[in-house]
Length: 249
Ligand code: IPE
Ligand code: IPE
Ligand code: MG
Image (cartoon, rainbow, N blue to C red; front, side, top):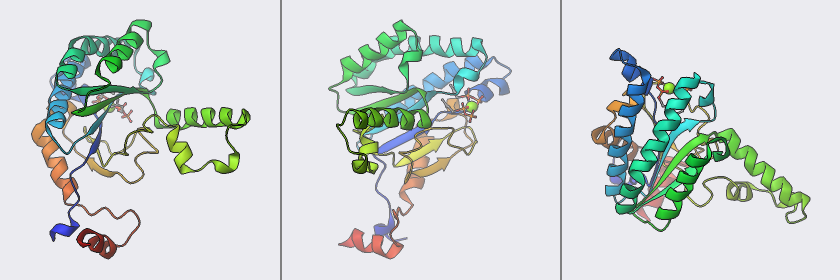
């Protein structure tokens, strides 16, 4: 394959961090141990992305709007781990010039956690090495629904004409309106599904599935995913020839 067919490195990487529970179960350990090991993986991957000059945004799916269906004890554990991790990591993220951002319906979290999330965003808002987006109580359908609600309110208030609603307007009301769509989507843990993650934004994202469980996912695993991504030709509806021509013009 000639160079002109090679995709540029991904600027926005989005990851479904799956497989913590199975990682622990394989070791005859409680699922909690897998979630703790998963946090270590998060540190490694954030560090890799902050050091990679091509990577500007990393979005991590930490807790889905459906994860409340888990046993209450696991939900409680995940909330505590979320709080503990924010307490220990916000200063480090700030020192490393990383901007922290949360997407999802945070009103379901307790006051202290909401406060910590706000604190983390405020403290790091001017950082430039990497934007780290944590999806917490996030669902793609929730995101689209909340956008529809705001748009309808604007229509009802006479601020917006129904005829003016188009893809750009919808996009402007979604959680990641100010950030580019993901270039590379990775799901660890072997499942090949989207599980309600970034449904709108994944329209032209390249998908990469690996059976590696999240706690085992390391910098080399991410490098492999990026190498695979770079070997692909993204066409966005064009023909391969058109893309090749564009690359040389
Ligand atoms: C992903 O790992 C972490 C969260 C959903 C919070 P899982 O907990 O889903 O791990 P498996 O899929 O059961 O192995
Ligand atoms: C998706 O993983 C959500 C997160 C990684 C936070 P799940 O493990 O919850 O997904 P399903 O239930 O297997 O689809
Ligand atoms: Mg899972």
